[in-house]
Image 1 (cartoon, one colour):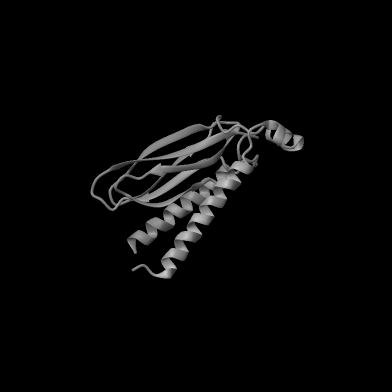
Image 2 (tube, one colour; image 1 turned 90 degrees about the vertical axis):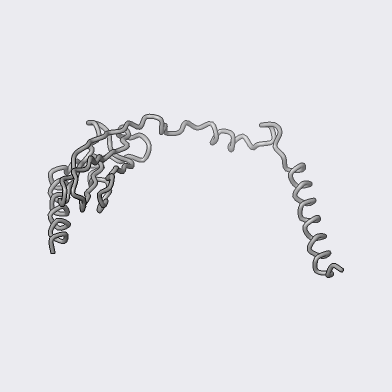
Length: 159
């Protein structure tokens, strides 16, 4: 014999689903005349295009027993909005955007006895497109920071 709680739960489910069906029929928008003009105007406003992203790739080799890095730089007039890389069988230590948004770099530790191909990739948008911001270039400073991180990771590896 079923418990009263089961019957009450089934009835509550039936009422809830029935109410949803009624609400869906009552509040269904079938014409643009049902939408306020200011909402339609906002929906028709031009938006930024994300279709203008380009991919910058740069590959290199991670020597056996070494810490290595590769950097993919965006073309002039564009900035990185995202990125990543492929480290193969090495250990990926760092994968991040360069501080001035000019590209993306990865740092790997190759604990294997073989040379491994690695690559970094940056997804770039023209200045003013997507979420790219116009940042003054500080590439030399960022390259020095990347080199310092590579040295620090290499030192940790040998200690």
